[in-house]
Amino acid sequence: MQFKIQKGNGLKGEITVPGDKSISHRAILLASLADGNSEISGFLEGEDCLATIEVFQKMGVNISRREGVFVVEGKGLKGLKDPSGPLNFGNSGTSVRLCSGVLAAQEFSSTLIGDSSLSSRPMTRITEPLGLMGANTSSTEEGTLPIRIEPVDSLKSIKYSLPVPSAQVKSCLLFAGLYSQGITEIEEKIATRDHTERMFEQFGIPIDVSQSKGAKLIKLNKVEAINPTDIDICGDFSSASFFILAALITPNSKLLLKNIGVNPTRIGFLHALRHMGANIELQNEIDSFEPTADILVRTSNLKGITINTNLVANMIDEMPAFFIAASLAEGTTKVKDAKELRTKESDRLQVMSEALDSFGVKFRLEDDGIIINGLGKTGSFKAAEINSHGDHRIAMASSIGSLRSEGETSVLDCFNVNTSFPNFIDVCKEVGINIEKV
View 1: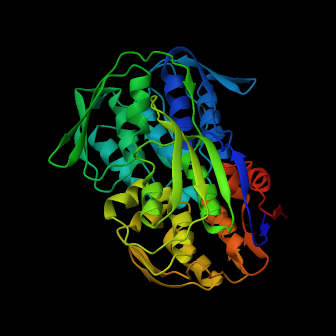
View 2: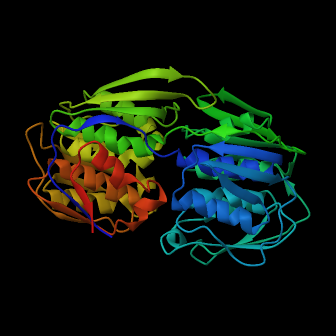
View 3: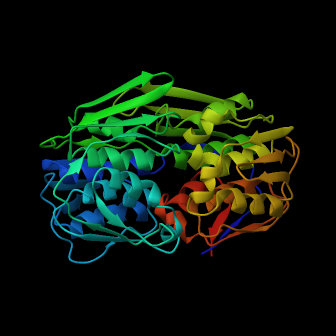
């Protein structure tokens, strides 16, 4: 699948985006482990989150959809059944890593597999600390999928300082901590998204979060049961970021994005853009278990900045969109300490640099970052053919960047956009973007 996009002008409208992917995964996990029925509305029906549903259905959890609401009949912490076959997580790194924490404590063996992209991503970052908790896991010699998990008598708690900022690793250990004897303690020196901590509290799981010497400390005791809970999932900020970008870089544009999650650990992209001079306004802010707001965005003249290192982990999924914004800013933008981008669905530093090169942007690629020389408010990209290498965020960022191209641009290998934003084309057309799927 490929997208063809024409130069844009005058994007207008009020839009919603699909439910938050990170929250959708966690809602299914906890609802499946609860004692009783939970209802989940706003669930992202993208391929990644549907893979999570299929995994738990294979372990005996009854999950049904009624008029857009998913009903999960939770089986309890120890009520999952032997799947009697490999569990396929497709393209979802979040799901395979979080579920590993749960599966490490079950009384049956499991084999975790995924597609070719997921099978190249590093898994020792979870298997090693799970091993410290007494889990019996094995992977390939390269530390990748498939992962084999064998049952053990019990898990033990650990004190663990995250070597790299990763919400997936943190969450894996917190899920394992639900089953572990003693107090599981995790230290985060650089804050990552905190959806798991918030979701645990929403499901009635006691969790202690504090600050000590500039680091975040999370403490969790073993629990005997989880209460079923109804969850309403807000719009995904990472999906919204592409339309925030579209309004900023396209002349004469004004977009209102409704009911978007604005969790403080997710909106580094907003902080960075405002520092660049972006005209972005939050309206109708609601502080629920996940804070939400409507986001009003107008065309803006951007200037280059040096990204604060602490923001990088916060905006890791928005970096492809940020690179496009930086390419159309006045002056130079510097990004460093972003090596984690090389371990995502693609090597996003390398693949985005190839996209920028095709667009005619001057930059210097470094091992852990990039320096981008912006084209300025009157600059435009070359019409190009961009290879997204099957990475949904590269595909969408490049498509939005094409709104400032000199002619028609093609973005190749876009099928995986369905993992996070299955109606991306429809929303694009709704605001006036001339895009076709071929």
